[in-house]
Image 1: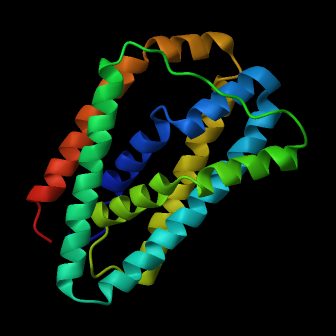
Image 2 (image 1 turned 60 degrees about the vertical axis):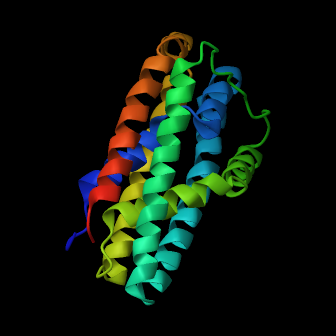
Amino acid sequence: MSDINFPLILTAAFMATASPGPSTLAIAGTAMAHGRAQALALVTGIVSGSWLWSVAAALGLGAVMQANAWTFELLRYFGAGYLLFLAYKSARSALSAGQAKLRSVSAGRYRTACGKGLAMHLTNPKAILFFGALFSVGVPASASPLQIASVVVAVGLQSLCVFVAYALLFSNGRIVAIYLRLRRWFEGVFAIAFGVAGLTLLARRL
């Protein structure tokens, strides 16, 4: 791990962003109920919150790397544990016969929708837990501030693309119906991927 593992980081971030969750379901519901413009305004707030959590996690990781090596090793176990927790949640969802419920954000000013998206993401404590795990997976202890910043930018841009794609796709009722019908298959794939990533991190020596 002498270099940043961008493929692993971006793959894990993509799975977490694309998998069904409060943000994606809210975007889908808003796009269906109020149109693309409202959904894109919501996306702006969600992505802004994602960037803030990512920066907070990066700064926290930088502080950890200034400390003793055992603290970074502890962060590695924490990251692996959280990935395995995500695998468990995805597996449980895949085995559940219930259908995911879409919830929309009430229509209004675009600025209001953006603010609601920001508040939704900032009040989700799992966001910073995920970003902490993400940085522990693919960022070495020797990474420079510039390298860590490059991870923040790359993950942020990828999240923006994924959420915008959801806003555009979910304004089409047929797309939403197909997505919800195949939800359990998607969750099964995410469960396997998160599980493999967590076990790989546990087995890897830093």
